[in-house]
Amino acid sequence: MVEWIITPGLTDYRLAESWMERRAQAIAEQQADECIWLLEHPALYTAGTSAKSDDLIDAQQFPVYQTRRGGQYTYHGPGQRVAYTLLDVGKRGRDVRQFVKQLEAWVIATLAEFNVDGEIRDGRVGVWVPRPEKPRSPSGVVAEDKIAAIGIRLRKWVSFHGLSINVGPDLQHFSGIVPCGIADHGVTSLVDLGLPVAMPDLDSALRKTFTPIFGDTPVDTAWKDYSDPQLTPL
Image (cartoon, rainbow, N blue to C red):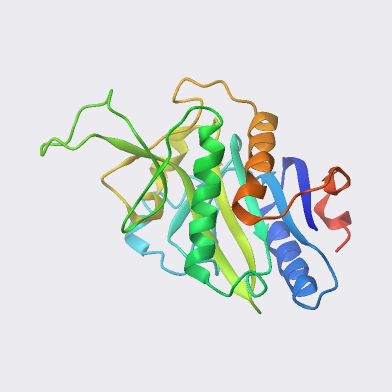
Protein backbone atom coordinates (compact mmCIF):
# COMPACT_ATOMS: atom_id res chain seq x y z
CA MET A 1 0.00 0.00 0.00
CA VAL A 2 1.20 3.50 -0.85
CA GLU A 3 -0.07 5.89 1.80
CA TRP A 4 -1.14 9.34 0.66
CA ILE A 5 -0.67 12.24 3.06
CA ILE A 6 -1.84 15.82 2.52
CA THR A 7 -0.63 18.43 4.99
CA PRO A 8 -2.58 21.71 4.87
CA GLY A 9 -0.95 25.07 5.44
CA LEU A 10 2.79 25.69 5.12
CA THR A 11 5.24 23.08 6.42
CA ASP A 12 8.65 24.05 7.80
CA TYR A 13 11.39 22.73 5.52
CA ARG A 14 13.68 21.27 8.19
CA LEU A 15 10.72 19.62 9.89
CA ALA A 16 9.81 18.02 6.55
CA GLU A 17 13.37 16.80 6.03
CA SER A 18 13.45 15.26 9.49
CA TRP A 19 10.14 13.50 8.94
CA MET A 20 11.27 12.15 5.57
CA GLU A 21 14.51 10.82 7.07
CA ARG A 22 12.58 8.90 9.72
CA ARG A 23 9.94 7.63 7.33
CA ALA A 24 12.52 6.48 4.76
CA GLN A 25 14.36 4.57 7.45
CA ALA A 26 11.12 2.95 8.59
CA ILE A 27 10.26 1.95 5.02
CA ALA A 28 13.72 0.43 4.54
CA GLU A 29 13.19 -1.59 7.72
CA GLN A 30 9.72 -2.64 6.53
CA GLN A 31 8.21 -0.88 9.52
CA ALA A 32 6.10 1.55 7.46
CA ASP A 33 4.30 1.74 4.13
CA GLU A 34 5.62 3.69 1.20
CA CYS A 35 4.00 7.10 0.92
CA ILE A 36 3.40 10.18 -1.16
CA TRP A 37 3.40 13.35 0.94
CA LEU A 38 1.75 16.43 -0.57
CA LEU A 39 2.44 19.82 1.02
CA GLU A 40 3.46 23.45 0.56
CA HIS A 41 6.45 25.24 2.06
CA PRO A 42 6.95 28.88 3.03
CA ALA A 43 8.97 30.83 0.46
CA LEU A 44 12.55 29.49 0.48
CA TYR A 45 15.43 28.29 -1.67
CA THR A 46 17.07 24.88 -1.45
CA ALA A 47 20.54 23.97 -2.69
CA GLY A 48 21.03 20.42 -3.94
CA THR A 49 24.30 18.54 -4.10
CA SER A 50 25.18 20.06 -7.51
CA ALA A 51 24.31 23.68 -6.61
CA LYS A 52 26.77 26.34 -7.81
CA SER A 53 27.33 29.42 -5.69
CA ASP A 54 26.98 31.74 -8.70
CA ASP A 55 23.41 30.51 -9.21
CA LEU A 56 22.31 32.07 -5.93
CA ILE A 57 21.56 35.60 -7.13
CA ASP A 58 19.92 37.02 -4.00
CA ALA A 59 20.74 35.20 -0.77
CA GLN A 60 18.78 37.78 1.22
CA GLN A 61 15.44 37.34 -0.50
CA PHE A 62 14.43 34.09 1.25
CA PRO A 63 16.01 31.54 3.59
CA VAL A 64 18.45 29.20 1.85
CA TYR A 65 18.60 25.55 2.91
CA GLN A 66 21.45 23.23 2.05
CA THR A 67 20.10 19.77 1.30
CA ARG A 68 21.50 16.44 0.20
CA ARG A 69 18.99 15.80 -2.59
CA GLY A 70 20.27 15.71 -6.14
CA GLY A 71 20.10 18.81 -8.32
CA GLN A 72 20.89 22.49 -8.00
CA TYR A 73 18.99 25.51 -6.63
CA THR A 74 15.21 25.26 -6.39
CA TYR A 75 12.48 27.54 -5.09
CA HIS A 76 9.59 26.34 -2.92
CA GLY A 77 6.73 28.47 -1.74
CA PRO A 78 2.98 28.98 -1.41
CA GLY A 79 1.06 28.00 -4.51
CA GLN A 80 3.52 25.27 -5.43
CA ARG A 81 2.59 21.66 -4.79
CA VAL A 82 5.49 19.66 -3.43
CA ALA A 83 5.12 15.89 -3.74
CA TYR A 84 7.62 14.02 -1.62
CA THR A 85 7.92 10.48 -2.96
CA LEU A 86 9.00 7.98 -0.32
CA LEU A 87 9.05 4.81 -2.39
CA ASP A 88 11.06 1.60 -2.23
CA VAL A 89 13.08 1.75 -5.45
CA GLY A 90 14.79 -1.47 -4.37
CA LYS A 91 11.66 -3.51 -4.81
CA ARG A 92 10.70 -1.50 -7.90
CA GLY A 93 13.62 -2.71 -10.01
CA ARG A 94 16.66 -0.89 -8.56
CA ASP A 95 16.83 1.29 -11.65
CA VAL A 96 17.29 4.92 -10.61
CA ARG A 97 17.11 6.31 -14.15
CA GLN A 98 13.89 4.45 -14.79
CA PHE A 99 12.49 5.73 -11.52
CA VAL A 100 13.25 9.34 -12.50
CA LYS A 101 11.60 8.71 -15.87
CA GLN A 102 8.53 7.48 -14.00
CA LEU A 103 8.46 10.68 -11.96
CA GLU A 104 8.68 12.71 -15.18
CA ALA A 105 5.92 10.64 -16.78
CA TRP A 106 3.77 11.14 -13.69
CA VAL A 107 4.10 14.91 -13.93
CA ILE A 108 3.39 14.88 -17.67
CA ALA A 109 0.28 12.71 -17.21
CA THR A 110 -0.92 14.99 -14.41
CA LEU A 111 -0.50 18.12 -16.54
CA ALA A 112 -2.36 16.40 -19.37
CA GLU A 113 -5.41 16.25 -17.10
CA PHE A 114 -5.54 20.04 -17.58
CA ASN A 115 -4.73 19.88 -21.31
CA VAL A 116 -1.17 21.07 -20.73
CA ASP A 117 1.55 19.45 -22.84
CA GLY A 118 4.50 18.86 -20.55
CA GLU A 119 7.75 17.76 -22.16
CA ILE A 120 11.22 16.66 -21.08
CA ARG A 121 14.53 17.79 -22.55
CA ASP A 122 17.91 16.05 -22.70
CA GLY A 123 20.31 17.75 -20.36
CA ARG A 124 17.56 19.73 -18.60
CA VAL A 125 15.98 18.14 -15.56
CA GLY A 126 12.28 18.70 -14.93
CA VAL A 127 9.21 19.18 -17.09
CA TRP A 128 8.85 21.98 -19.64
CA VAL A 129 5.96 23.68 -21.44
CA PRO A 130 6.38 25.15 -24.94
CA ARG A 131 5.33 28.83 -25.13
CA PRO A 132 4.73 29.58 -28.82
CA GLU A 133 3.04 32.87 -27.88
CA LYS A 134 6.37 34.21 -26.57
CA PRO A 135 9.15 35.60 -28.78
CA ARG A 136 11.37 32.95 -30.33
CA SER A 137 15.09 32.79 -29.69
CA PRO A 138 17.45 34.47 -32.20
CA SER A 139 17.89 31.05 -33.81
CA GLY A 140 14.12 30.61 -34.17
CA VAL A 141 13.59 28.12 -31.36
CA VAL A 142 10.18 28.22 -29.69
CA ALA A 143 10.34 29.55 -26.13
CA GLU A 144 9.61 27.13 -23.29
CA ASP A 145 9.24 27.49 -19.55
CA LYS A 146 9.78 25.11 -16.67
CA ILE A 147 6.67 24.08 -14.76
CA ALA A 148 7.98 21.24 -12.58
CA ALA A 149 11.24 20.35 -10.86
CA ILE A 150 12.52 16.92 -9.82
CA GLY A 151 15.21 16.10 -7.26
CA ILE A 152 15.53 12.91 -5.24
CA ARG A 153 17.80 11.17 -2.80
CA LEU A 154 18.10 7.45 -2.09
CA ARG A 155 18.94 5.75 1.18
CA LYS A 156 18.96 1.98 1.33
CA TRP A 157 17.11 2.12 -2.00
CA VAL A 158 14.26 4.16 -0.53
CA SER A 159 13.66 7.49 -2.27
CA PHE A 160 12.81 10.74 -0.61
CA HIS A 161 12.47 14.36 -1.61
CA GLY A 162 10.71 14.21 -4.99
CA LEU A 163 9.08 16.80 -7.24
CA SER A 164 7.29 20.13 -7.29
CA ILE A 165 4.66 21.49 -9.67
CA ASN A 166 3.93 25.18 -10.02
CA VAL A 167 0.20 25.66 -9.56
CA GLY A 168 0.06 29.37 -8.79
CA PRO A 169 3.16 30.58 -6.95
CA ASP A 170 4.54 34.10 -7.26
CA LEU A 171 6.87 33.58 -10.22
CA GLN A 172 8.91 36.64 -9.24
CA HIS A 173 10.18 34.59 -6.30
CA PHE A 174 12.29 32.53 -8.71
CA SER A 175 14.35 35.63 -9.53
CA GLY A 176 16.71 35.12 -6.59
CA ILE A 177 18.23 31.97 -8.12
CA VAL A 178 19.05 30.41 -11.45
CA PRO A 179 16.48 27.60 -11.18
CA CYS A 180 18.22 24.24 -11.54
CA GLY A 181 21.20 26.04 -13.08
CA ILE A 182 19.35 26.85 -16.30
CA ALA A 183 19.54 30.55 -17.15
CA ASP A 184 18.22 30.61 -20.72
CA HIS A 185 14.61 29.68 -19.97
CA GLY A 186 11.82 30.95 -17.76
CA VAL A 187 9.39 29.40 -15.32
CA THR A 188 5.63 29.11 -15.55
CA SER A 189 2.66 27.76 -13.62
CA LEU A 190 -0.81 26.47 -14.35
CA VAL A 191 -2.25 29.85 -13.37
CA ASP A 192 0.31 31.64 -15.55
CA LEU A 193 -0.88 29.47 -18.44
CA GLY A 194 -4.42 30.78 -17.89
CA LEU A 195 -5.69 27.77 -15.95
CA PRO A 196 -7.27 28.66 -12.57
CA VAL A 197 -6.42 25.27 -11.08
CA ALA A 198 -6.93 24.85 -7.33
CA MET A 199 -4.55 22.74 -5.27
CA PRO A 200 -7.17 20.01 -4.58
CA ASP A 201 -7.69 19.69 -8.34
CA LEU A 202 -4.00 19.04 -8.86
CA ASP A 203 -3.93 16.58 -5.96
CA SER A 204 -6.79 14.62 -7.51
CA ALA A 205 -4.98 14.53 -10.84
CA LEU A 206 -1.76 13.33 -9.18
CA ARG A 207 -3.64 10.54 -7.49
CA LYS A 208 -5.52 9.54 -10.66
CA THR A 209 -2.37 9.31 -12.77
CA PHE A 210 -0.19 7.58 -10.17
CA THR A 211 -1.47 4.05 -10.72
CA PRO A 212 -0.89 3.84 -14.51
CA ILE A 213 2.72 4.96 -13.99
CA PHE A 214 3.76 3.10 -10.85
CA GLY A 215 1.31 0.19 -10.78
CA ASP A 216 0.03 0.80 -7.25
CA THR A 217 -3.61 1.60 -6.55
CA PRO A 218 -4.09 3.96 -3.62
CA VAL A 219 -7.08 3.02 -1.49
CA ASP A 220 -9.43 5.55 0.03
CA THR A 221 -8.41 4.69 3.58
CA ALA A 222 -4.83 5.68 2.71
CA TRP A 223 -5.81 9.23 1.76
CA LYS A 224 -5.21 11.11 4.99
CA ASP A 225 -4.99 14.66 6.30
CA TYR A 226 -2.39 15.46 8.94
CA SER A 227 -2.28 19.02 10.23
CA ASP A 228 1.06 18.52 11.96
CA PRO A 229 3.73 16.26 10.44
CA GLN A 230 5.26 15.80 13.91
CA LEU A 231 2.10 13.94 14.88
CA THR A 232 2.08 11.80 11.77
CA PRO A 233 2.62 8.13 12.67
CA LEU A 234 5.49 6.43 10.92
